[in-house]
Image (cartoon, rainbow, N blue to C red; front, top):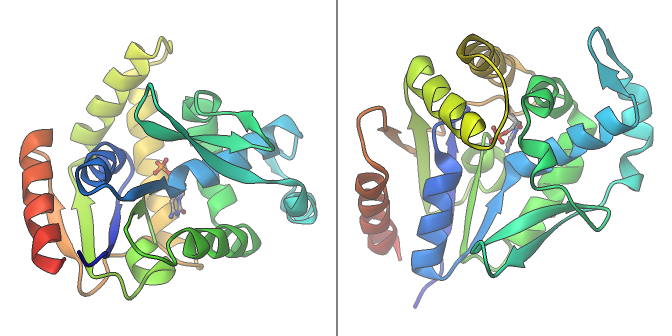
Length: 227
Ligand code: DC
């Protein structure tokens, strides 16, 4: 069977990764969460005191980029690949609101993007991949056969994210989450390098009122059409 590349882009907390994971599983494709890679670099910057409230030493981060090795290892029990930074599993540490607060400025640095985009293109060179992010259909795989652009209102997305973080045991307010979602949307969409925009040939899906099952069915139908 022909293998294709599926690019899923969209705003923060649109549930891209939940859907992408399921699609990849159903098609027996590789799934790559590129947001996790930008979060891994942000985790590194936080641990090395290169970013924090009111400061960002981006020059030093750029100098240290060769000390950052990001990899994914499939966890049989969880059924998806977890992200590792220099061989340490950081899957949980990168899902905090702290990392979410600093990830957009880090992702705006061209040197960071260059390094990660090269790695992403290598991972997808043989197709048979579902990749989610912000610039997959526009920059990483402009030739992808199927491009999806996910949207939902900021309130819907913040509510979903808030619930997810509470379930993970984080103590935070809904307003902090809503503020983070809208701030990230703004920085991600207005940055100079590879801003979040819908690719011309992407199919837009507003999932505010769609269940996960409905989204999976729609996407699988589309995928099979292209395959
Ligand atoms: O998908 P996510 O919310 O985990 O992504 C975290 C941040 O990483 C997001 O706010 C913007 C950045 N990002 C990006 O710039 N390009 C990508 N391909 C994926 C994520």
